[in-house]
Length: 287
Image (cartoon, rainbow, N blue to C red):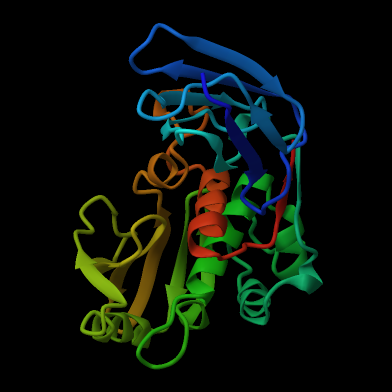
């Protein structure tokens, strides 16, 4: 057997070492050979493997606090084959979250929180008091959508976030809000520029007294921003969410049946935004 090594570089979505013991299984795809090892550092060299043309393996990596990842690897005939894996967090293993302080939030988001004093379940709270009162799931979801909508331009030159005038309800996977009536038209205009595409909004239900007024999605492969509008005269509200669109499976090669969270869990959306779109919602996980 030639001198063949597999070099693994295991990091989280920010590029930091995982910092925990990781189990690795390599299964040869022709021969009945299985190699199991445990890695305790960011980088590791695995020896004793076969090289091409008999160097095809299936590699399974199972970190305790991150999602289970699996993919195929074709080893070089000799020398070192290098692989780098980014691992999304397992939502069920998060111990706490280091959120940004209120003063550290983007100006548009702080302005929005200051005008939102009737958020469902948080009535009479606004600004810093509202932000500090949100549980981790709601706060993470809000920061995800604020970051994505603040990074999504329209043909006007403004961002989606700048047209949101008041938050009405905050959930982990979406928020419901009042928007300037210009936002729907600017979003519609942005379809021709390829910034959005029109989609069905049939799964989104209007609030009492409002009628459906079109739904649009950004063109991202994974982590799409969806704006679903409802109108009552000149008054507009929107249901805004970020769609996973199987992002964990495709961006990270996550094994779907190993997931502990739902496809739209805000912690998973965070990982897609950071790794795939280079959009940082501003908070970090502690596992």
